[in-house]
Figure 1 (cartoon, rainbow, N blue to C red):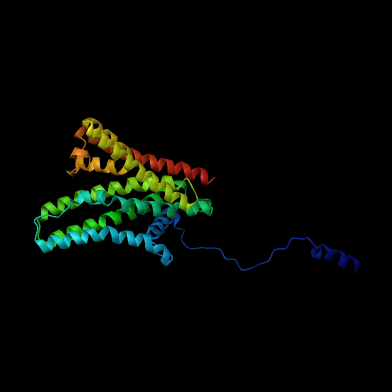
Figure 2: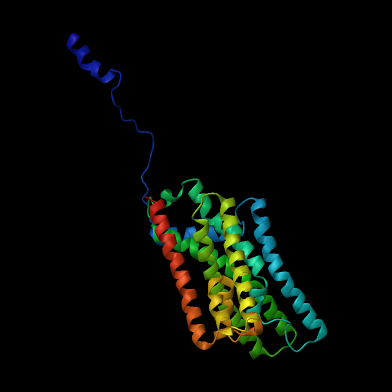
Length: 304
């Protein structure tokens, strides 16, 4: 009896480890891997850029900005149809340049929403646990914001194009102009998305990110426009094009005036020459590539 009792004592002694079957079951289904995870992150980020799947409060600003972008185009179409004009009041390539304040405000509001919350709540390392990697995260976020910007800037061009066809304007001219406008806003979307995400990724505070993006986009444009005006007054026309390299919106203006047949908003209407235009397109692509590289480097550090 004593021997039996001594053998049972270790099994009931406090501090012993016991294994209980609490009902966990292994997953035997398909594992979709990195591609599916990247696509899911892209889809959710794109939906979030317009507040879809989020609270009503989150939908107000992006939807309002979308309407503000499209309403002037609808008014122009109505005027064109009512007056039976022979052309639209504005070229397709000029629309986003004129509405740059709305585009900048959208970038400032949505770039921090895309990345700052992940930094603030320290969820980035969870993304990188498996199977997604740093490059997947950056590509998904970059592509989502660029796609959201393309929707914002291409929608009014579509309104103009449909209106022009309803007004029975020349089909070939309108189709060519519409295609040039799409190329322009696609490049603008990539450039603004890259710059906005790089700035927003610096701080986990969304408010600081919004202020920083607005400051960079508006101050750079104001400074460049002022310097170009001074150069025009001083009759130093050659310097106007080179000054335009230092603002995102003037970069796009220079590229489309050099290669897409658009009229330039530079002082005196003097856009870049063909040689200067090559520098503009290379500089624009370089900024986009640099933005992607900086984001990748930033999130490699965050994910450690």
